[in-house]
Length: 346
Image (cartoon, rainbow, N blue to C red):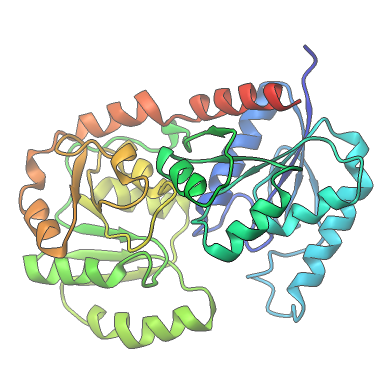
């Protein structure tokens, strides 16, 4: 069978690969690089500051969150819709990672098959739009819980493809330093305040790394997070690049993932475990599918239970964390699953 010509569509908010934060963008970068190694003809639609092996087509010179001059970001999205429609006859398949922004492509006619990976939780307005376009688009999700969430809203899902990572980029460390780690968006939904409370109540050092997007998140940070980070046991580092992130993962004795939403996957969990770092997470969304409770971390329901888990983290064998990622969450496994899905759809 001839290798497919595939259009991969990235969100335009940050570059591919991400400079700092960006789970979707990191996953997409690894996927397109792996597909090219396997001989596929890949065109990536993304911001112009992306650096990839695929053919890059860009409606903007810079990612929208990094372009302070942009007053009308949605004009750039419309431009990308136009560009992809102009090129559509060149592709056997379109793989969309840019949520509902790209759904109007199906209205233009003569579009090749389109697969959309749903990377984020599905709220009601999003569910309504997905259902409107479900006769025209195939949808896949990242976990069985995400499938369940979709089906509860009468959304049909063609497959579950968990995220995978290039494990060679995450060196194992069996002798961590003496700190806990929180790494993610610094907002309510990701649970940064809970992480800070747990560290304070256990008397543990904690490193807080992550980013803030938009006025609402800045308000939350200033009102709820800022007062808690002025503490001798808290090291606030803000945004970190990939190398800095891996260094933090490797050095942490545990990563806290006190998620306050129905998490579709949670890429940072497998990134941490690939370095040997166990994860302590709230039992929401995909968490039970990613962590083996008592073996690669702990799954808890409350802040008090998270504190208990921190106090017994030394019973976790860090090598088991790596074994789990090698068994279930590698880049090769993710690419294999998408290859199979592409052939099924085409």
